[in-house]
Image (cartoon, rainbow, N blue to C red; front, top):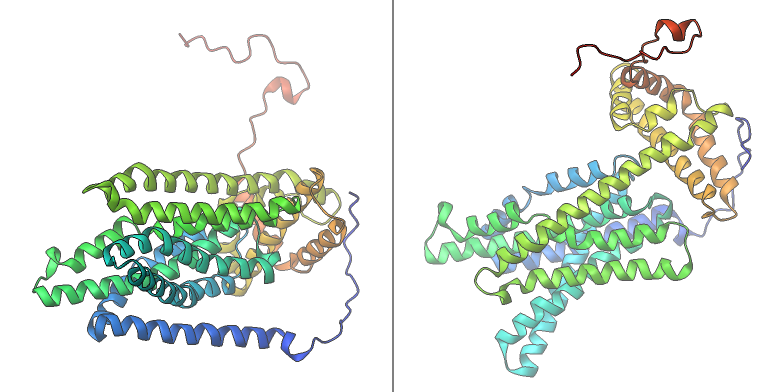
Length: 426
């Protein structure tokens, strides 16, 4: 894996695509589809809850959304994907996936009730079997679209989890409008209000105790696609997404079926399974993020020797604190938000380069390694002027202090046998 010296590749323009393959046409069609889905799903929800219930549900449902999106963005901050992917994921979950789910669930439940003449059994079957399959498949479609059309932005399990989690956050947002709006309608009919109201209880369960439920289910689908994005055999690239989707469906079914475990079934499933699964999954994803930082520290020094990177950069790029300081320094002293965005792009590109080389040394890379490596190096070289000073500053601030030099080390003498002896130590 020889490394060439810094240079600029020749720029060539390829043939222009036909009109329906142009990027603005695809983006416009997708935005129109999502907007139409949003209008239809909001109209359906307002029809079920009434205008006043819809507004109350909307105001309460939006409360956990910023915190969940911030959590997934924080999780993915080593190699953050573009905001347009997260915006698409949220819009798909809130509009398209929610519309698919409400139509398909209603149709399936009505068909089962008509065929079996057992409405209560149809509701139970719809909640525990139909809804998990329909809803997780609808949310997985967003992850699949990003995986197919934005493959380069699909950076691995952590990136897949972020996209899936934001998709599920959008879906839960629309679903919460419906549940909270209906709860408000119930309060209006029975005359309850305040902390003892059905609305308050519904918000506590869905917005305080379990806002992570839908994201937790769909994150398994995102992890499956993230593993499939890594160079592996074709069989594993199929098995990982399918396995993640099936696991998401299974957890969703267990959550919806918690009422079957008795009066305290919800608390049993929540405390005994969902909360521990959430904690374990968060720990695994954070460990995966720490691994990416370690790979950056270990793989990037080779590019220092070749002249592509400055000596302090591998240390700074392998530390979350140094990365944050570099962004802050660039924003305050080197050009404001554009400079900070340039540093983020530089950090993301360098991390992708380190992981590419790590996979190549492990023998898990295709024949396009040299081309991709040169693309990433060129991207770093073009933005080095605005990003390198910030990273060098951050490395200087966060570098550990040098070890003290003893008298015998300074003059090249071996350490005496009593070095480190403390006569006051017991």
